[in-house]
Image (cartoon, rainbow, N blue to C red):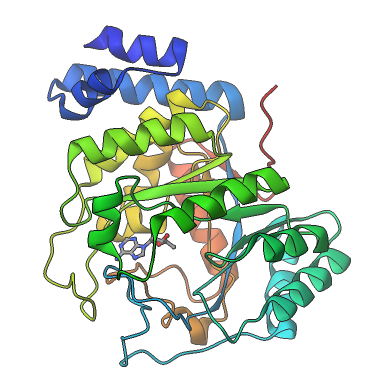
Length: 346
Ligand code: 5AD
């Protein structure tokens, strides 16, 4: 089995059967070999650096009803909020002072956040922070909208495909959400020129190893610049409230596999990892992740952007979040960096 890991490291690809073997492997030596190889590939590309992205959760209003997500439309228990342009710019200004040179604006699919408003936000940020990367994560929109946002100055876009298997996709989303549209969005984003991120949740209800193999094969072929993976975590106000959480070790294994498939990819150590286990983010970095996304969201709203339960305490304010993450990374021999850290494949 160790030779499979070496083959993946050298050729960046395996057959579906080989991926399946790696995902179901129980040999601890092979698994440690996988982790170490992934960590070494990341170290040789990025050094012991973890790029920080300042995350601004711009609103939790959402028209969708994804079965897994805590900010789904039908969650009437949730207090909804929406930041306006000046609020968002202010968050980024604060982040800039702390050293962030990438801002990620993430929000639900909010009909109240029109294309014009979003474009206006991007224009304002581009003007004030010409040296920063602007990343958007606001769901499925039309190609025309993506084009406008790109022209306005956005550089990157995050949109997880969640699962590549169409049946499985249907079991996670209401019928009105069609997978074709999600894939259409991803293709448009890439063609327009966005550095594009996609990814999955690990351990969603009814997910099988074969589904994960399909996800891996999709990512191999799509070649996203960013790959976001985190364990599924049940949220009590969703139809999946009583489902078990995803497996953290399987998630780590997937991070390592993606690192070997794509040495230059930006792979976050997600907050969901930290939510499931206190050292989750550190373990993700040691398995090949190289990005973290501390929050710049105003403290009064942070609790409302709750897509899953047990979201960890991230520090009372952006300074503390930055400090906390910086200390955690130093403890495992890494240093955080606010620099843009664009994808390059030289
Ligand atoms: N558990 C883990 N991740 C979740 N996401 C949404 N709901 C959950 C949950 N319950 C992830 C999805 C989405 C991203 C913003 O958060 O993958 O794309």
